Length: 169
Image (cartoon, rainbow, N blue to C red):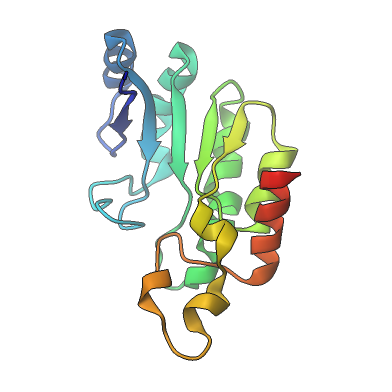
């Protein structure tokens, strides 16, 4: 068993932090959690621009960027947070740092599938079994079923079908 350690990106992560972590030999990636997007993300990144120097260092040293891709602004509908993150942030990161290897973690929408399919070979994604098996109808029809709640939240059936096609196609 060999643990693959991941650095938690914050607004204060420096290029030197990235270089030191990579040189350690046991930190293989850094994870971007937008502040407040999911469990234990309160110390996450508040602005993508603040971590551009760290992302540049990651591209230089070949460290993976793992992304929890949701915006957290209250005016954005919870079901649209992934798409807005792609449009406002992830597309810009991938364009600005074309050699950076990015893993879009636990994607939940057809928009994310399309983004990954159209991106370079440096962009990949993961999908959870939960999002393959269930959609928001399982969570909401007939009353709220809290055991289906997770973040990112379950989306509509059309997104579930896109995920299934991506996972099995």
